[in-house]
Image 1 (cartoon, rainbow, N blue to C red):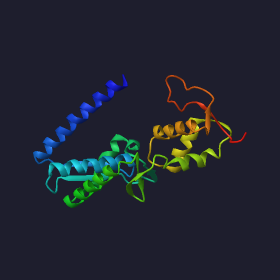
Image 2 (image 1 turned 90 degrees about the horizontal axis):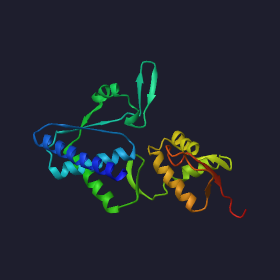
Image 3 (image 1 turned 180 degrees about the horizontal axis):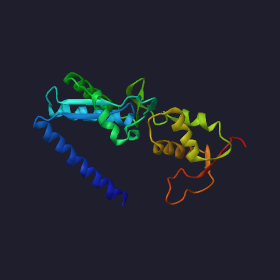
Image 4 (image 1 turned 120 degrees about the vertical axis):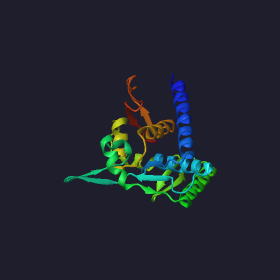
Length: 212
């Protein structure tokens, strides 16, 4: 079932991409929405590579970068991703758009080609730059919070602490995969199974102490 859904989404994405290409060829501008999250920057870099391949003329590409915070009346709202922006607020952020010079699009496309050649298992934003990193890049954040937990703990609470405290811009799913690796290494032992309708990390874990 999951494979069928993935194939459907893939076909839809190809159709949407072809629509974007056709409308660009007709002279319409394109607006890209992105943030400092690694997924968003990967998407921006990948799309720049497509624009370069299509030889889109200068002046047709605009970008809106998600601000780290916005003021709404007397309240400051901090965003980490576009998923946190309510639908009605997107239009209010359009004035932040900036035209991307063709030279910049070409430069981003070249950087994407470099990242592809490096073919790393993971990409992260380091000092504002999209970089190739090893798959255990985020493990220190997990281990730092693990030290603060009791010997037996709820995995979902652990992952939630890491995401909430460090605002890494990554998904809970990736951290859950890293936890699975720690289990394979013998650092942790599952004490329970998650409910069938919940993610795998809704379970109890226990720390393994070497030598005990």
